[in-house]
Image (cartoon, rainbow, N blue to C red):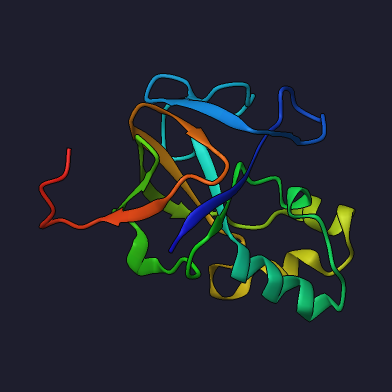
Length: 152
């Protein structure tokens, strides 16, 4: 079963990520409490635990996922290009996957080699936008909304 493992926000540029137990996701403001949340293709960033572990294994280190600066850590299969346009349901909220998150130079400032370790196979995760508001909590079930599904 796929689930939400952790949530983090960054209240202001340059500040460290802050882990939270729950978060409000809205179409208007993205993830409440995060300075980058806005309309567009980058309201929220998501990271697969498996992909993060692959990057850490490549570096030979165990690293906290928050240095990736993603908002959500998910127990989910690695993201791929096939996920772009799909809707991911987390609790009552729904997120449309829009684009691969491209690792930036700040990754290497945190840990030398991290940017390269996150680059292959979409290991850096994805960005998306909120298409249905909702409050999410650590431990929430996660599932894909298939095009043929009639769920509300």
